[in-house]
Amino acid sequence: MKPIKISEAVVRRLPIYLRFLNELSLSSIQTVSSQDLGEKLDLNPAQIRKDLAYFGEFGRKGVGYNVDYLIEKIRQILKLDKMMNVALVGTGNLGRALCNYNMYIKDNMKIVAVFDADQGKKGTLINHLTVQPMQELASFVKQLDISVGIITVPAQEAQNVADQFVSAGIKGILNFAPVVLKSMPGIRIHHADFTAELLSLAYYMDNINVNKEGDEAQ
Amino acid sequence: MKPIKISEAVVRRLPIYLRFLNELSLSSIQTVSSQDLGEKLDLNPAQIRKDLAYFGEFGRKGVGYNVDYLIEKIRQILKLDKMMNVALVGTGNLGRALCNYNMYIKDNMKIVAVFDADQGKKGTLINHLTVQPMQELASFVKQLDISVGIITVPAQEAQNVADQFVSAGIKGILNFAPVVLKSMPGIRIHHADFTAELLSLAYYMDNINVNKEGDEAQ
DNA sequence: TAGATTGTTAATCGATTAACAATC
DNA sequence: TAGATTGTTAATCGATTAACAATC
Image 1 (cartoon, chains in turn red, cyan, brown, yellow):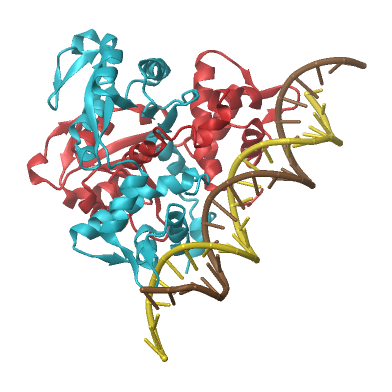
Image 2 (cartoon, helix red, strand yellow):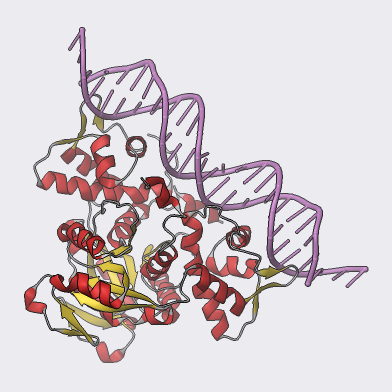
């Protein structure tokens, strides 16, 4: 109904909302206000209401939001209501850790194929998945209808893997390698860049009073 | 000289600059322009110049930036010129993966102690570090001068671990658990939230033409 | 009805980008 | 000197927050 462009910042908050709403649902809490959400998620209530309002009128004035209804709506918005298949390349420590986490299943994203450039790893089992050589990538993507790729290879190989993903028809990439991938038309690339998070953390050590933490000083 | 507040967005880009400059340095490239950096890092050159100018005049007009000098300066800004010790709690797949990565050493951040609430894991070796029980946390933080903590425990335990970090005297936390930690005065918390990155990726699948990727459409 | 809370507009705040004088 | 590129100001753009009428 509204073809208004939604900002990236808004979309990135939706999974945060969803996660907390799932917690509430598990605790059998049926209703939540933007106030409550804001306190728990450290966000401004007005921002939460505005974020949700981009997609529809999900709340009731004077009452708040129905938890299960809002979960359903956010899942629809994020397209988590249908299964999305994922391929992972790079079976080092991190890659294996991600395969073993089955966190995605609940949210209908599932790693269904694992690849490694090292021929020696071919045939290894990781959490019920057999490691495949890179030559198999394109055919697996087609056969299993894989739309998302995860990159957990060393930095110098990441761009090459990304290019192979795109050739194979993958539309979204989550890159864990500490390198900026070149953007490609029609391909969405997200970075899971925890080394950068860690290094920028260093900046704030001892610096605390100079910076914005200071607004909480009592 | 300039006690002007630096925005978080600026600080988060510094490690990205640093990483690419290190690559250039390894390739024996001595000079780089904001133009070059912008192309490789997918950023506006003006933004890069402005970011760097917050901290000093590091470039030369008509020439560009000296790679090694800029590396040194950014390392100083991020406080990576002195060793920073890190503790990690949670020796599941992800925790072990992070311990085995020795990526931090080059940047002078090093995991020097590993903890797990599971008494059964006590004494296990992970990449030359012995897993300690949580009771030892405070004394290790003091003895090894640990200032940063990494959380790789399940979501429901993360806040508890964070509280223990803070009691022990840790000032910065990198949280991998998919939960928002409550903010605490004087404590800097960064989130490495790849589940959120993955879920928000789903939003953009098939949606590509409706959204901002469209500006690249030809 | 009185109290609570949404959806939304307007105001504020902050970040990005363009432009250009300075200068190597 | 001519060409290139910085540092910085001003303009633009976008995101957050405050405020409040609507209404449950």
